[in-house]
Image (tube, rainbow, N blue to C red; front, side, top):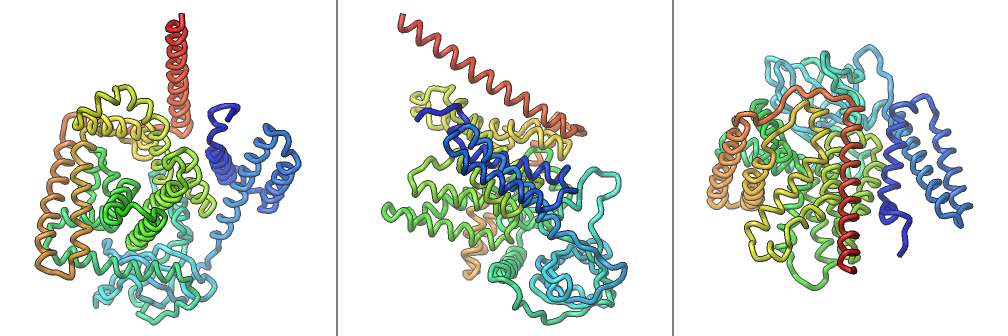
Length: 515
């Protein structure tokens, strides 16, 4: 098949880039344009695409234009659907807790979803003032309350560039709410208006809380349990600021957030347990069902959903005998997620995960080929180490500018961290899954819990040792969005230059050999 260029081989990548560009332009500069203008431009572009079907180049440009206008339309519609006004007074309403309450100073914080009334279905970050009677201690995920809520649009924090309202909107939250200690009471709230998906998610969150309590009842140390719970159930509320900072300085923060690595490990576990050769489609269906059941159990966090979508596409294309880890598969995952939630483009985890995978897909094959494959096949340990080095460096190259921009920090020993952390994290995740599976057998569970505590303590010790090394991280990095863009442009330019130089040397060698 002849193509006009490398990008012609990846049509979905171009469409995903056009959709993302439309979302970006719509959010940054398209607020004053009504929805109908974006929709009209989209319809016209689609119509022209159909008319110009005999002119491939023009048709491709029009199709990308249609995706661009679709992105702007979806963004404006999504934002308008979440924009509402609130009275400067308390509003009587009912709500359901969709997260386990956490004590923060004088208030109890929890995520709630309003049921019924003018704000039905609205998700809010609620703060309930603590009372001396301790009624708040009876609040748990899935419980209904009614009372007087004071709703507010989210505001940015003082003295920080962090866009808190955008952060909440990316996760579906429309407002914050404050409730006085004497302005609420427990109530039975009807969930008839909820979809099966919402009810299933709530049941999964309640079950997760029971598992989490089981962790705590096993007698595992606070820091060890916090790390195990974060990695297994996606609950990072028990991580202390000091422990979070230690993992960040060492470059191991990705271990604490459910991501592609964690679900990849779970995928391998399911593949091993369902390792029959025939009926591959049935095997993949069961694996996908198990992955999504696990994602529901962890509360449908954005990072876990991203990874689950990627794995689902991975499984589907593997059954279809396609290239499973291709740029088209990555672009398809991006298209699905951005169409479902256009604001996901502004989610830090979305940006970092897709750039990391993109960097790996583009760079890993040629860089790994720097060492002779036949020689590596005879040196298994060196082969594993070389693969780890290449994988870590490729991923780091893709996310380093974003890490510096969002967190003002760069971890120097990220390579050492991955060698120490990934094997321990893999073992800890397998042990945690075994612990959850064996909680009905107290004797077996207690032995597994001891192993979990030991491995988690090793993991924490390794991270603390690396973060304490001289020059382990560079702090106070300040980059603008333009500087980040220019860094990526420079990286792409260097990669293109290296590819052309390699191709030129190969062609020269071939001509000399022919002579």
